Image 1 (cartoon, rainbow, N blue to C red):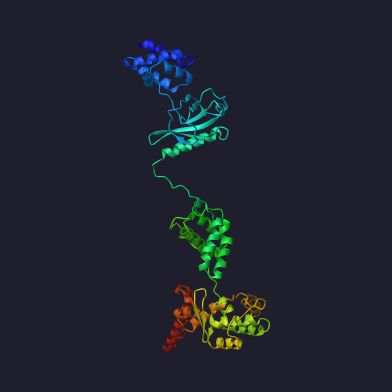
Image 2: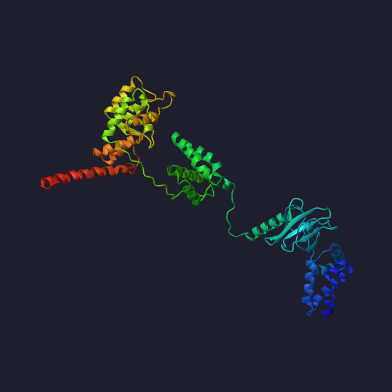
Length: 480
């Protein structure tokens, strides 16, 4: 066989229409394999035949007209897997006709079914194919190699999946195979989509057992009022420090509310880590600065103490419970809730032993006026609330309403009921007691809390220095 004889081979379209010419052409190709001059051209012609086995009947007739040995070396037959809706390798028991490569679209999917089972491969995405069956069933398929084995996967029928959806699915599968064995970002778990709105009830339920009732009420209010409006729809697992920073900026108009709510949010992240919803040590609240607030400082002067005492005497009949509570606050420096919820079982003069308070168990030291006041109230009572509400006897009395009226009568409208505690500390400092003793009297758990009164001690030292200097100057004959 010479070069010009090979060049005279008919085109593929002519071969496809005539099985006899196909058979003879295949013989020429096979025989040319031993001719060095035209071997490259024969190889190219074989490749062309391999890529365009359009008509199964012509291929089968050519196969019968040639020896199995020769035809096997000349044209590999595409043997596709059965349409089992999943993965599979080539099935030798079935021979499917492979169609031409062309861009798959809706028009190709709407073609009339062929007489024999055929696969049309996409010209732009060679791994993407359309399987056409004589029964009329049409399905999208993808072919790929996995661990050296060629596999096929049926994506879905053309009736249920559009060509665009099928093409996107093929790209997704091929991308996954390309990344197989490489380090990848961990797949997102179902709990990664847990939102703060869904997590909040679990958080409250898990933590309320170790919180005090008042703390539970306060924290539940912070969650519903300050945290969920911003974080409600956000995933607990994906919250970042930038989200907390934006929340802080959004709360700029409510610095006190933010300062109270940020520890609650931090506790939510800690609980999420314990429950496996977040990675350990990933609390985004770490390092978030609270808003600096100037704590109000209001201390009563001796004259204001006298005005308040007169207002208390005038209000004894109108607000009896509130007056007695306010007097005990003045005498002891205790917190309002500690005195208002006081019970007779805890009173053992000259001390009151509180089983619980803001800082845990606490001892309140009673002076003579406080002991006398409690003795007048006790009578024959040995248990129960000392200051019970008139409307709800099982609840403590709230002195807030009576305090507002009393302070107005005393001309102290800017004084809060908590300022009585600060004034107690200021008097103690003026009397020369150390911050350690004052912290013990007030029940402070940390020395830093009592340190806010240090400047009062500085004023006292400055006043003492002035007196000493004046005394020395007088003795030396200097005119002050």
